Image (cartoon, rainbow over all chains, first blue to last red; front, top):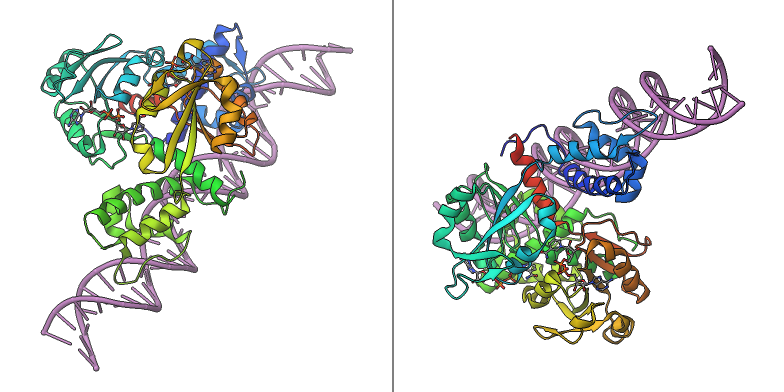
Length: 209
Length: 209
DNA sequence: ATAACTTTGTGATAATAATCTCTAATTCTA
DNA sequence: TAGAATTAGAGATTATTATCACAAAGTTAT
Ligand SMILES: NC(=O)c1ccc[n+]([C@@H]2O[C@H](COP(=O)([O-])OP(=O)(O)OC[C@H]3O[C@@H](n4cnc5c(N)ncnc54)[C@H](O)[C@@H]3O)[C@@H](O)[C@H]2O)c1
Ligand SMILES: NC(=O)c1ccc[n+]([C@@H]2O[C@H](COP(=O)([O-])OP(=O)(O)OC[C@H]3O[C@@H](n4cnc5c(N)ncnc54)[C@H](O)[C@@H]3O)[C@@H](O)[C@H]2O)c1
């Protein structure tokens, strides 16, 4: 999808962290926070915090800092989280089940509304209150719930097929947990999350330290 | 932990992808591959592939390419995957269960050998063949199995405590799935995996496209 | 009111990472 | 064997991202 104005993707990830701290601060009754406070809580530098925010506007007051609640709202707006996003999961296996049971997504506005699988034995099962549907139901469910986001939680050998099905159903943002490169048209957003690679960064670093 | 020689962390992640493609190619009987083949399979540029490999040595033959199996072995060695790594998981919840049931880690040399939880009701349960132990057993299990790697799969409010416990037990590489910044001494390796932030990158991009 | 202090926002600078371009090695073809 | 084609390796270049340093704006104390 066409991006706004070349914002570093790392910035978006940090905004996510900042927003969680701000929510927390606001809940504790802390009205104003400085870039230093945010930085210390999230493990970055104060300059980085200010630079990240500067991409989007001026949210603070010099000599004072930022209003926690206001900045939280601004960031959530920037991230598109000022509304709810229905999400489809493809693959009702171990990972699909964990994702469905996870309460944390709802706090950020994500609502996993259906899981899809091609194994007839899994159809009709329920993970928390999320029902497992056959792949044939994907297109209709996407339309009914206006789903824009999907998660690939099928084995690597089926990941491309899962992506193709989602795209055909008009989902245009995809997270892929399968350890394989899925190829999509450039107007589709795709992020790969490779858990083994994360562990491998650790083993690489520990190897000859 | 002290790093070797400022290799981009993105390079390590890509090596992981390359190695999976190489394994696959070797299994299919493909003896030599070019940087172009690797690039196309993993979604990067050929120059990037060569540059990544160049950090570590010369593995190819000009005019020919790379021997799939040899390069695979080299990369696995670089990543520290020429041996098995026992892994501890803290938190026997949804995510902990999914990780224990996941077969893919074993292929890369990771062996989740125990899960720990502070909920008495969970102790003794088994996820696949991984047993749930009380937190009090952590130190001894780490010693017995020579565990160096740990995964935090507890709620955010307990993540720092889980990290502190692991470090006390002498684990020195940690993956944190909790959406919070855990603070550790600089000789400890820590990677955060934030699934909600990944989805938020999508919503940010879809927002006003 | 003034001086001392705090903190943002930003242009300049530095560091990091990706891409480009060319050379050298090797194979293939005729 | 000569010439064309392929492909790795590496230095140079460009692009991207993070850090620094400081002026501007605000607050607090005297
Ligand atoms: N479980 C984990 O902790 C974990 C960790 C890292 C990566 N992953 C990756 O996530 C993916 C899922 O892992 P998992 O452990 O849940 O696997 P799993 O085998 O438990 O579940 C996969 C599910 O996908 C379904 N499926 C297979 N092909 C399908 C298709 N074409 N269309 C629809 N459904 C299909 C299967 O019926 C099954 O229910 C894998 O690619 C795995 O490599 C999982
Ligand atoms: N489940 C998911 O798909 C998912 C996705 C993204 C992030 N996460 C994150 O992963 C973490 C785990 O998620 P989950 O869904 O498995 O949660 P969960 O509530 O299902 O499980 C958490 C487990 O941790 C145990 N626990 C709590 N405090 C502990 C402590 N101090 N020491 C040891 N054990 C302790 C609990 O007894 C429980 O069994 C959370 O931080 C969550 O935000 C989970």
